[in-house]
Length: 277
Image 1 (cartoon, rainbow, N blue to C red):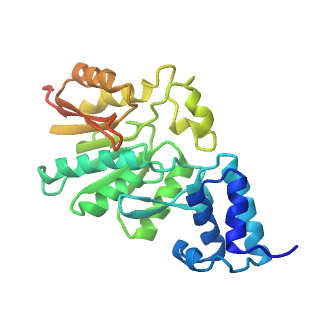
Image 2: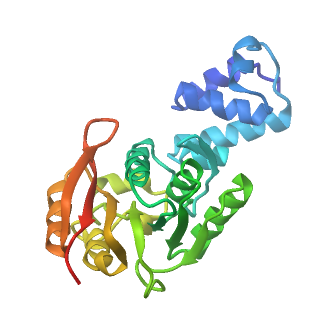
C-alpha cells in the first residue's frame, strides 16, 4: 500500500464522515505532533503504524465514540483531564457551575468545606480546588472505576482532594459543608438523545422516568449536610429549572436562583440553606 500524505489521510477521514477538526486532532495524536504541524506538512507521509492507528480511530469516531475517549483527555476549566469510558466527558457548559461555585466561595469562609457529589472524572472538584486552593474538597462517586479516574487525575495534576466512594449522601453521616455542588444524572430514561450518548456510562446520564430522581434525592437531604447559610448548587437539564427550584424551596432553601449555560439555556440552580433545625 502506498503511504498516504497528511492531506490525503485527512481527506479520507472526511469521506468517512469525520469532522475536519476531529480528524486533524486524531491525526496529530497519531503522528505525535501538534495540530499546527499538520498545516505546514500536508505532504508528509504516514508510516504504517500511524496510518493504522489513525484509520482505526476515524472508524470509531464515525460510529459516534467521543473524541475525548480516543484522545484520552479533555480540557476543562484550564485543566487537562484524562478520561475514558468509565466517566462522562466533561462538558463546557459545566464550567458555568464551577464559575458560580467559585463566586460563592469568594464571599464565604476562609477555609471552606466543599463537597462534589457524583464527581466522575473529578472535573468539578479539581477545577474548584485548583482555582480556590484554600477550599477543602471532598468528592464522591458510587463508581469505583470513576473514582480511580478522578484520583489519577488529581495525582497527575498535584491537586489534593478527598476521594470517597458513596451513593449520594451515604457515608457522609455527621459531615457538614459550606458548599455542595453536583452534576448528577438528569436525562429522562426514555429520552431519544441517550442513543447518541451510548458510549458514555448510562448510569451517569439517566435518572428515572422524568430525569429528576437524582436531583430530588440530593435536594431532599442536603440540609442535613450543610452549614448554616451553606449553598447547594446543581446542574440540570435545560427544561428542569422550575422543577429544581420547587425542590429546593420544598426542602427549605432560600435565595434560589437559576443561571444559564454558554448557549443561554437554564443550566444551574442554587439555593441557600435557611431552614432552622
